[in-house]
Length: 367
Image (cartoon, rainbow, N blue to C red; front, side, top):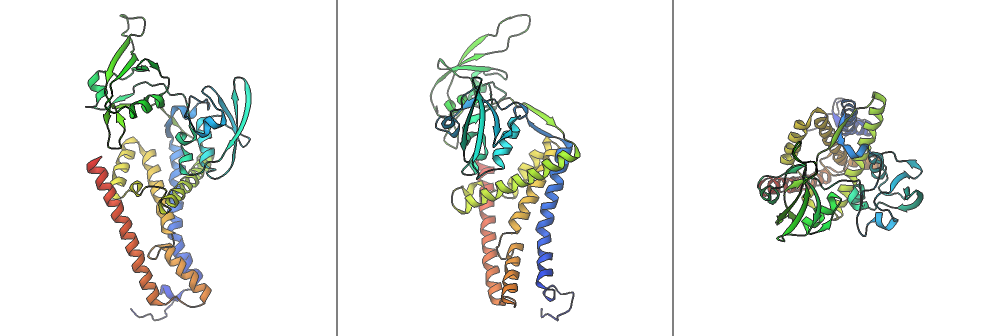
């Protein structure tokens, strides 16, 4: 429709006014995410029990940052960049908050303090696997998948796996590493099983032979899960506000890093999910409780806010880009250029939607 120049028409407003209107949409998405996160910490979060424990190293990966630093099982991390680390949660939060900075770490080993430094290079440095250290985690069976080799072989929940083919193991990651690399091989597991009260005083030792089956990812599986030891952590209003805002900042950082890795080709497009994946995760979160559901809603709202600010025509960020050019050129961008740009933007969004739907369908039907 032709414009009349009336004050109620959007194009009749100043560039600054139009930019404000467009920017407020993504800003409210981010504000909503902040509100949800504050409520999440007020209600309380179920976190792995080990996160509340002292950061005592229980496992070191070979050829990892941890092994290069000289860390070993039993060492306790005391500080990062001079900031005391009292729990594993604080340790991981500090690393996540400094994805590109040099981190000086101080730890205690055999009664002596030792120092070292490392630099998280990419998103993978935000988890314990890439740093190469993990808390103590005994190889105890916490769950069994129906129809998998472990259930068929007679493993029971509560079993502690102490040896594989006669070699001692003391950590869950050692156990899973061996199983993943043993597709089709017969493994002999030595297990300490909880005794039946009044009948046995000592833990009975059981030996079970098992053959890992191949998973679609090309790794061996026997169908066991570690125990799910979680605790509910609640916080005051002040602390919930601080932690909620920090959590939003951390999620935004992780999100931007991930998107950067996708666009640069360093992360797989298979990681992108669509409506089916959202429904599945939302369903799981709802079953877990109101806190988890609000956390997921906050995460989604934050993602919407960030993605909408990308300078892609059709999105709010694209409109802001055109308004920026209008402010510089002191005249509106040519309508034909706008239309062509928006067509390109629509094509990009449709392509992204197709990728997301395809990934969802493959995950849903092919596991």
